[in-house]
Amino acid sequence: QVRLVESGGGLMQAGGSLRLSCAASGRTLTAYFMGWFRQAPGKEREFVAAISPSADDKTYYEDSVKGRFIISRDDAKNTIDLQMNDLKPEDTAVYYCAVHTRSGALQTQQSYDWWGQGTQVTVSA
Picture 1: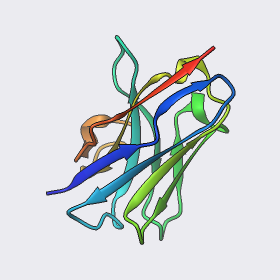
Picture 2: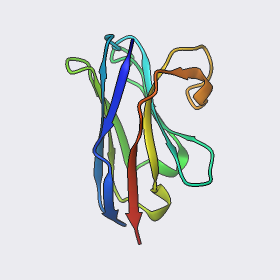
Picture 3: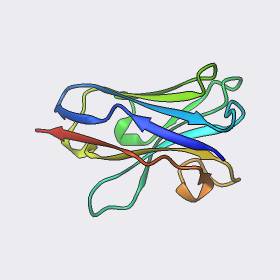
């Protein structure tokens, strides 16, 4: 049984930074693509960023966060992080990490299993 626990959310003013972390237990996830999604009130859950296994060293971002967010992973700790810089009010959402286990696109949440419970990020203007 894989368990993912997100942390690091909170309240931040626009222009500030937050670092989210996702800790995995129950299985080593070094061979998996991992992703971050977010869900704002009244909206669908959307893709934010994904990272390949370390051997491939590739990252993927949704257009609105490119240049502001950085996804990384620490295989020794079995964690992935999301460094969020220059935060905007539209970044306000619950952020989830998940494991890409199926053959679908990285941007599609149906391609993922083993979701965390989410962490709230609120950005004030």
